Image 1 (cartoon, rainbow, N blue to C red):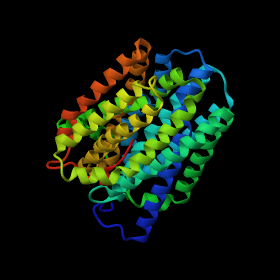
Image 2 (cartoon, rainbow, N blue to C red):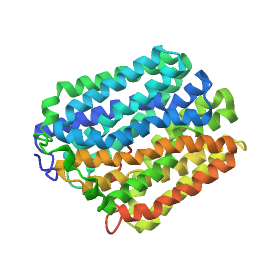
Image 3 (cartoon, rainbow, N blue to C red):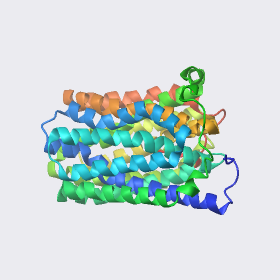
Image 4 (cartoon, rainbow, N blue to C red):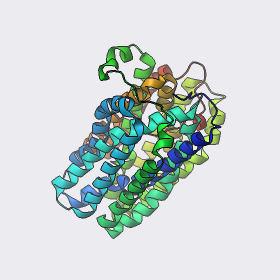
Length: 406
C-alpha cells in the first residue's frame, strides 16, 4: 500500500491526483446545477407540505449517512474504484429519470435513490483522496476549491435550466456524471494503485466498540452533524423563505446567493488562514458560529430589503469557511490506512444533519420566520465544545489547507 505521507512525485500518482480533482469538479458542477433547486421543484410540481418536502430532500443525506458505514467497509474490502463507478451510474440514472417523470411518488423515489449512490461514492472517493493527500491533507484543499468552482458554475447554469424545464435541468448532471464514470473507468488501474490490494479481513472486524473509545472521532462526527444541520438550510428551506417573500424573483436571488457564497469561500481562504495562525482554537470556532448566526438573522430581515440577503451571505460564508472543513480533516488525521473507507463511511453519519435540518427547518418556518431563524442561529453554537474536542492539539489546522465540504 502506498505511503500517504510521501510527497507526490511519481508520475502515476500525479495522474491519479489529476483524475480525482477533475472528477470532483465534474461531480460538483453536476450537484450544484440541480440539487439546490430540488425543494423549489417539489414545491412547484407537487402538493407536498414543507416538512414533507424537507424530509424528501433530506432523505438523501439520511440514506447516505446510515448506509455510508456499510459502504465504507465494503470499499475497504473490495476496492474503491468499482464503487465510485457504481454510485455514479446510480446518480446518472436518477437524474435521467427525473428529466422524464412527473408522478410525485416516482420523483420522491428517485430523489431518495441519490442517497444510495452517495453511500458508495463518498467513502470511496474520500478514501482515495486521503491516500493521495499526504501529510496535512493538502488535497482536501484542492477538492474544496473544485466544490466552490462547481458552486459558481452549477447554480448559474441550473437557474437558467430550471426556468427552461425539468428535462433541461436534470439532463446536464446526468451527462456530467456519466462522463465522470467514464473517466474513472478509463483510469481504473491508476486509481486502484493508490490503495493497493483490497483488505481481506472479515466485515465484522470493524467494531463499533473500538470507535466508541475514540472520543475525538465521535466529537468530529457530532460537530459535523450540528454544523450540517444548520448549513442544510441554505439549499433547502432558505430558498423557500425567499420564494415566499419575492415570488418569481426568488430563483434569480437564490442562484446569485449561491454564486456569491462560492466566490467568497475562495476569497476568504487567505484571511481565514491568517486568522487561524493568530487566534486560539476556541476563538476561531466561536467566530465561525457568530458568522452563521449573523447571516441567518440578516436573511430573516429580507422583508426590509433584498440587499440584506447579500450581507447575510457574507457572514454565512465566513462561518462556513471556518467550520465546515474541520470534521473531514480530523478523520483524515485519525484514520488508519487499512480502514480509511470505514472511517470516512462512519463519518458520513454527520450528514444526518442534512436530513434533520430540512425537516426541522420546514416545520419551524411554518410556525414563523423569526422562530425559524432564531432557533437555527442558536443551534450552531452547539458545535463549539464538539469542535474544540475534535480539533488537533494546539491551533486549528489552517482552513485553506484543511478544507473539505462533504
